[in-house]
Length: 154
Image 1: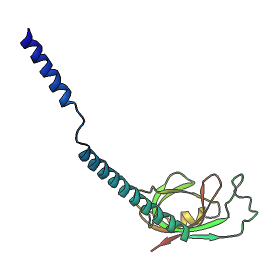
Image 2 (image 1 turned 30 degrees about the vertical axis):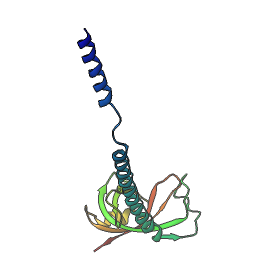
Image 3 (image 1 turned 90 degrees about the vertical axis):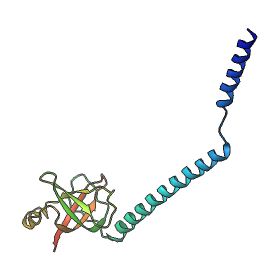
């Protein structure tokens, strides 16, 4: 019985000693490595965001808001933006999609709405997928991007 008790105590001690915390120095190295990787990833995302925002800001032109009632209930922000991109196709009779030039691939294409003034010009351009275009547009307070002029770039 004493031998059995001795073996049991030795097994319990072995069990508890194997469950002890690992070396804290190696843990700290792992934590430091993970923090450095996450910091680098975050810095890369910030650089991409800054490049996208600087491209967007450089294409903005201030204009005087007009009393044009063609926007119905949508209010105009007062900025006409000029951008270039690749025509991706029509979403429906009023909207089309453009992959903007000079932005990271992770940024999704933008959806633009045709204003009544440019609808005929848009149809005359007979755009095909992957055609390069230049667009002038403004953003309404509810986030719609309304095209005021469009050109096909050769």
